[in-house]
Image (cartoon, rainbow, N blue to C red; front, top):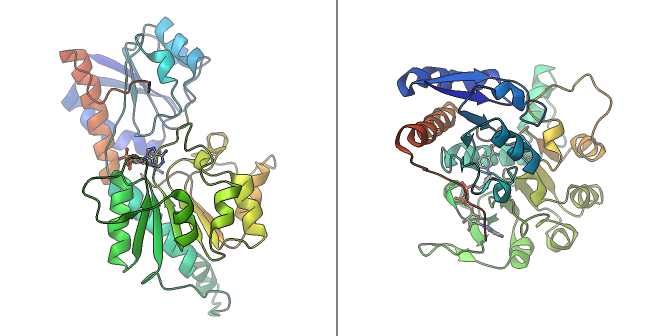
Length: 329
Ligand code: NAD
């Protein structure tokens, strides 16, 4: 039986993996700890390690995985910016789940946008307290407004379709223009100038790190709302905070945050040592933050479990490397 050590797990991870473990003939050991040089010992005797978005899998961790005779690193996520792929190359195969439910993420992006714009989170709290005032709850119609989509892959496309359902105009920026695109591609600067809503759906790479920084923020409309369900480091959070506090842009919907690995997925409500920028962002009335939950639907979790187990079993039983990640040359 193939033995797999799962790191950074939460109760909801088990639901689909446990249901499918028998079908795929694997034994799973769940660990809440993040994967690190220190915790790798938990994987002793396992064939594969399965990790997630906030496990910092740097070259030391790759060395440790190899030293512990782990044969495969299976990421149960799409983005693998947290893995030192170059260091793993030729020593430890790395696989991922390139597609599970682009709809889950795109729908969450729209949920955040609608919440921030129409202030339903505030209305919910108010009415429960028998406060039926409408003061400060004014939003704007999405219909007829322009959305700028950065990255027109699976999630970006799903988001474009949702926005079109709302009657929005679309412009997009991508380094690779889709041949079948029926939307206009513009430069990132033009997108920032033109858009009422800017939604990020590109991967985190050296090129996209702080893509939304002081310069591009300066080009945005005073009412522009920035939505990030991709990776925190796409936005320079300090520059975003500055623009928001100077009322130079309209608002921000953040499912991801630059320093999220220190906080997201756990309860720090009783602590006082807090990331200052995040705490200030959270204090603003025109910012909404969710803790990297855009993927969190049953449909996505089932697909993640199935593809992860197929990746693992394909490797150990047939020597296949489906969905392998290779270093960009
Ligand atoms: P995808 O590979 O289908 O699409 C990514 C798009 O970004 C592609 O069209 C690509 O050409 C484009 N791109 C690459 N480099 C770019 C650059 N420098 N500038 C502009 N565009 C660039 O990926 P996807 O499935 O649509 O996922 C997008 C991202 O969403 C992932 O990389 C991941 O970081 C994030 N994600 C977040 C969650 C969540 O729960 N919040 C879940 C899944 C994925």
